[in-house]
Image 1 (cartoon, rainbow, N blue to C red):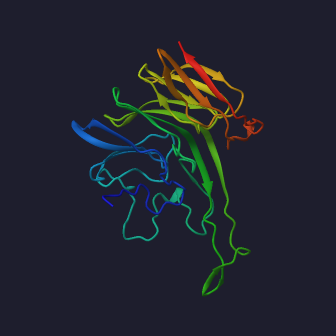
Image 2 (image 1 turned 30 degrees about the vertical axis):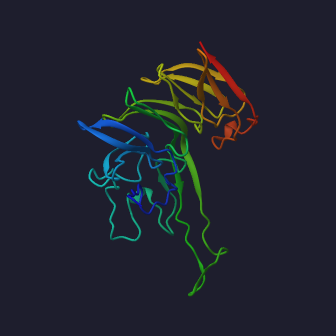
Image 3 (image 1 turned 120 degrees about the horizontal axis):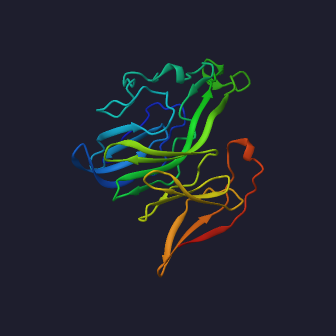
Length: 276
């Protein structure tokens, strides 16, 4: 093991960082850096030195975030992090410890950006991510034990409760040189597809209510959309045959939220569009 970096020590919100880590060279703070960058599920965009794992910079990219008051500029850990504690407290209003009632946490446990493929434009030095905005509430579900020697008693243990609110999708454009969000578009439904950027300045994604959408990759102004009539979960891809460029999207994959889209039916199709 050459190095490691832990984003959220003692996480209890399902902020596991299973998503894409982007590798690129860029300028940060006037210095040329070899970077591994990541849209964290915990709501922060991270830049690390990929040669040694050292934290370079972090910034919030989701609209709502309350589980911590920020990142330490040196370590990249949450500012409340205390290595002497077995159980971290972070921001108490958003941290339901064992036996606590429901507490509201932002971002939602589905993200920010989780598994969705991200994109990076090496000319404009902009990273793109699609995902989920909003918050959720959960309790600290107290355990009961069968005896002093251990063994969980499921009948007398408190049940886990949780629910989501402010639940919607987003597309984020992040300036990696200046480390800030420069544009954001929002959608009524979660985005579980991916971001596909092109040299022509057009960014594509797909929504779970059936829309394939194209955006200006500088401003995220919507340029075009087409509804295929079935949920979309796969990321769009572009390719060329001769001088003709195409956009392909694989349809299918159930949505999770919100429930007003529950009657959408899955269909296994491949939709291909020609770019003129």
